[in-house]
Amino acid sequence: MENRFNTIAGWALAGGIAALGLSIVTGEYFKGHRPEKMGYVVEGVEEEGAAGGAEAEKPIEFYLASADPAKGADVFKKCAACHNANKGGGNGLGPNLWGALGKPHGHVPGFAYTDALKGVPGTWDWKSMSDWLHNPKKYAPGTKMTFAGLSKPEDRANIIAYLNQQSDSPLPLPAAPAETAEAPAEGAAPVDGNATADAAAPAAGNEAAPAAAPAH
Image 1 (tube, helix red, strand yellow):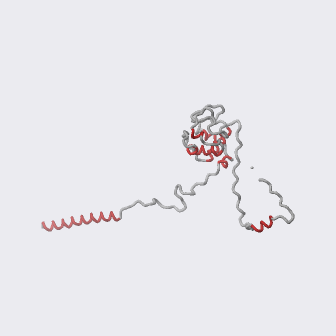
Image 2 (cartoon, helix red, strand yellow; image 1 turned 30 degrees about the vertical axis):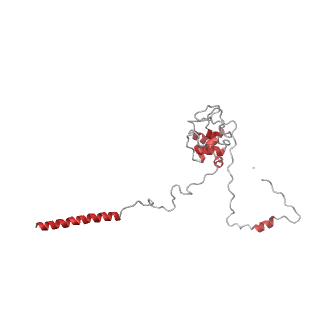
Image 3 (cartoon, rainbow, N blue to C red; image 1 turned 120 degrees about the vertical axis):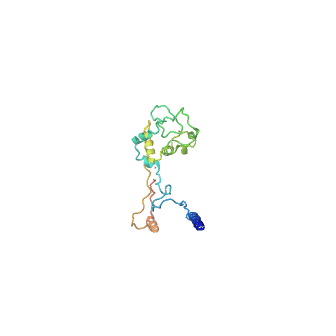
C-alpha cells in the first residue's frame, strides 16, 4: 500500500516538473517583443514632422499687404513688459520702439544694446523685423532678448504694421509680391517656336521698333 502511494506521488511530482518545464519553454518561445512601429497605419495620414506637412511660408510682404495695425496693437501686449512704442517714452528692459522701422540696429541713444545685435548689419526693414520677431536668438545669436518669438507670419505682419504707425513718418507698406506667371489655359495649342520666330521677324527693309523699358 505504501509503495503504491509512493509510486503515485512520484508520478504526480514528475508530471508537475514536466508541466513547469513546458511552461518555461513555451513562454520563451512565444515571448512578446515591442513592435518596431507602434499602432496602426492610416493611409493618407503622414507622421508628425514628415516632409510636406506644412505649407511653405510666403515672404512677409505678402502678409503685410493685408496686415491690421489694430490687431498688431493686441499682439504688442506680449512685448509691453519690456518695451513701449510711445513718442518720447523711456526705455524699459528693452529700448523704446517709436520710429524703429527704417532705423539702424541699435539706434536708440543711451540704451545698452548687446554687441550681438549691434553687430548685425543693415536696418530694421520689413524682412529683418520679421526675422527678429520670429526668432530673436537666431537673428542675433548672443542677444539678451529672452522672447521666444512669433511663429505665425500674420501676427508678425500685424505687429510690424502697428509699429510702423508709431512714427512721425510711417513707411508706405509694401505691395504683395507678384505671383508666378499663370500656366497656359487648358486646351490651348502649344506655341511653335519656329513659327513665333518667323512671325516676329521684321519685314525686309523695316527696322523693329525698340521695346519699352520695364520698378535689440
